[in-house]
Each structure stands twice: as C-alpha cells, then as structure tokens.
Image (cartoon, rainbow, N blue to C red; front, top):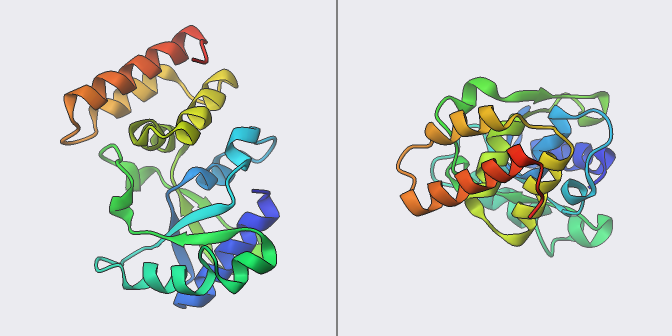
Length: 182
C-alpha cells in the first residue's frame, strides 16, 4: 500500500467512526516509522488494520468493516480497504502504548493514526506467524530496520505467550541477528 492510500484509508476511517484519533496495528503501521523507501513486503497489503482508541465491544470496528472494509464499495472503488479490528487483535509487548508513533499529514485531514512502533510491530507479526507476516519480518531484518537486541527485550515483555511460540519467535530474532532471511 502506498503512503497516499494509507493516508486515504486513515482519513476515511476517522470519518466513518467520527474520530480524529485511530490505532493502526497491522503492517501498514510501518508508514509512521519510515518516511522513505518501505520494503515491498510491507507494501503488498491492500488493507489497513484500524482500531478505535476505545472500542472494547468492537462496535466501531464493525462500523469500519461495514463501511470501508473488504468487499465494500470503498474497496471495489479504490482497490484497498480498512479492516476494523480491536486492539487485542495483536499480541504486543508490555508498554507498547507508550511507544506508539504519531502519523498525521495534511492528507489525513486532521485524523491522527497512532501506529505501532517498528519493534512492537515486528513482534506482533512474528507472533502471528503467517507467511505474509514472516516475509514482512524478514524484509525488515534484511534492511536493518530493527535492532535484534531490542526485539529480544520486547519479546520478554509479551505476557502469557506460549513457550513454544516464544521459542519460535526467539529463533527468528536469532536469524535476524545473523542476517539470514529464512
């Protein structure tokens, strides 16, 4: 997804839920951390995972999905969409809220997207472990966009993580240290 498409989805989601602040927890959160060349593996996605800042029952997430989500008129018109999510969708290290990165441009029309910081994003994607998530993590490692030591520290701050998943993610961190991509 291009920056302009990300900005449009943020602006549209803000309008849909009548809010000037949103939370972005998926791969497109990388737009807040990188101003330049974003790896292709991060731009492949046609969706932005957006949560309202306070939506414990998921009502606003459903509103985003129904209005500008997958298979909506918005999606068919523009070729990308916003996926309404709740913050618990992502598995995140303790303290993640304190590290959110503010994204606001003239094109977001006053809507601020609070995006996961790149190390928290890497942890979330690595824990999810889908092929597209692992490709995203590998690309970020190859480009040297994350610090493996910081990834290890953040992994230790994920509460109630199954030890097998933690071990698997730690192996990915080790490969990131060694510069390997597989």
